[in-house]
Figure 1: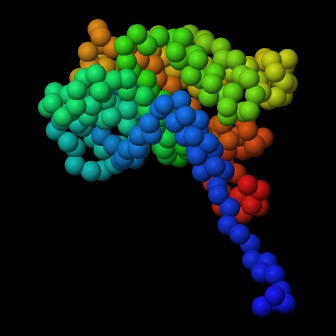
Figure 2: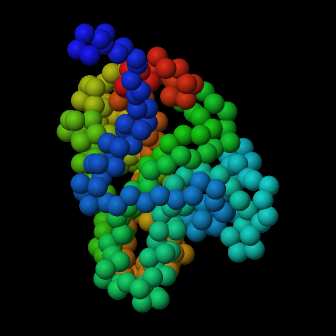
Figure 3: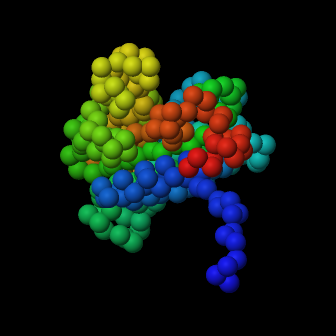
Length: 266
């Protein structure tokens, strides 16, 4: 047996999205976050209404959302393929509030709520080098007493520094999202040039990376949580976008075209 030739069969590789998802989960669980999973087939209420998205919001139009021809639920509306993993947060918070009301858990044991929600999401849009009809996203949520913007900044700086293995500063820019108030665009100091300016950051020194903000009080109330007592922050970004930055990919479609020459590099 010792003289037999070595078996040269190729060994399988993890997909880069799988690798980065595991890395992201590991970083956040070390910070005390739990991982929450949820359904990809959702109802309008969980995907839009509970998140304070108006009925006439453009994201509800056919060009952005995949609506399914299933029977409409009288309470929760039409069936959709989730457009973000925020629906997981809504279901998680709603279930926590329900358990408190039913006496299954004590209120002090339910908070703070600290979760991340990685998963696949869907948008009805044309594909190009930076957009796909399906992609992967990770969202985070922290709800408790006296949660502030300072907590959000600290968590994100810790995450990006761990993810890129380098101290990273984050910059907040005012923006608008229906489910947070105030809403923010989060930019991080470019990990390649350290803020000096390069082709990655388009010579600005910073890279826009995610949306975030303080959870809108109406969203908390929709989930049965007292917004006068509790506050929280939420954030979300594309794992595919992080993969493109970390691995230097110039086309998101490389992650999904099945070309083994891409996968075999990881």
